[in-house]
Image: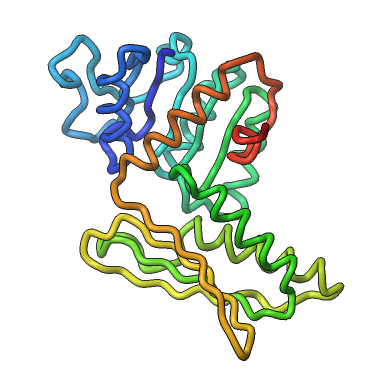
Length: 247
C-alpha cells in the first residue's frame, strides 16, 4: 500500500511516517507539509522521499492519503486534487460546521473515511456509551476530556462527537429535545488523551473512560482504516470508522 501523509510533520503525522517506514508491507509515497515548513526539501529519514508541499500533480501515485493536518490545509488539498478518485482517511479535527459540510462534499469524487478519533478501541467505547444512553435515557450524561497543555482550550472533535451522539440518542428515546450534555475541558502536561462519559443516575453513577497512552494509537488506527478503505473498490461517498469495523 502506497501511503501519502498530509500533515507529515505534525504530532500524529510524524508517528504515521515512522510506522509506514517500519512496515515492509507499506510504502511512503508522499510526506506533505506546509509550504512554510523548515522540512520542505529535506529527505524523510535519509531516504529518497522528501518532505514537500502538496500539489495537484504528485498525488496520483498514492493508493491512499491519510490527513492529520489543519482544516485549512485539508480543504486546500481537497481543492487541489479536484476530481481525482484518491481514497482519503481524514483525522483532522477543528472544522467549523460550514467547513465540515464543504469537506463532506468532496466525497462525491472519492471515498473518504472521516473520524474525530482513530485510536484503536475508541469506536467500541463510543458505541458502548451510546448504547447505555439508549437503555438509560433518564440518566444525566456529561462529557470530559484531558489533553496535553499545548492543545487549544476548547472541546475537541472527539468530545463534540460524543456529546452530540448522546444528545441525539437521548432525545430520540425520550421523544423531545433533551438538554445537551456539558463538556468539561482539562489540559495537563503531556497527556495524550483521556475521554470520559459520565451518567448520573441520582442514586448511582456510571463512568466510561477511554485513555490513550501514546500517539501511535491514532496512527495505527488510521493505517488500519486506510487498509480497509482500499481493500476493495469503494463507492465515492463518506464512510465512518464504524463502517470499517462492521462484520
